[in-house]
Image (cartoon, rainbow, N blue to C red; front, side, top):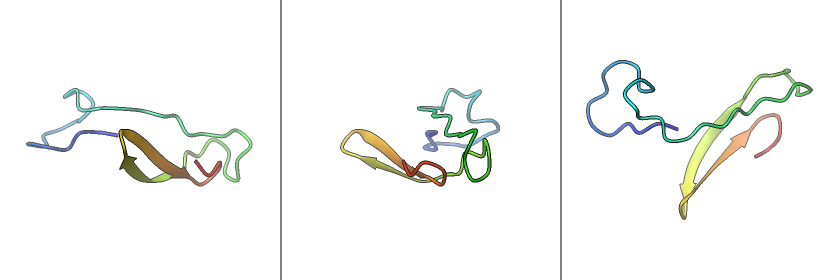
Length: 56
């Protein structure tokens, strides 16, 4: 998850805009080690996302 407020110039990681990271991979998933994370939603101070391999 990255902060996209303000001017977006170049690599957001090197600008210190990365707020959170979760390595959503599964070695025995439908597509092994494919993260498949999508639909990130902030809710009451938490961040939820769906993952194609594990559900959440």
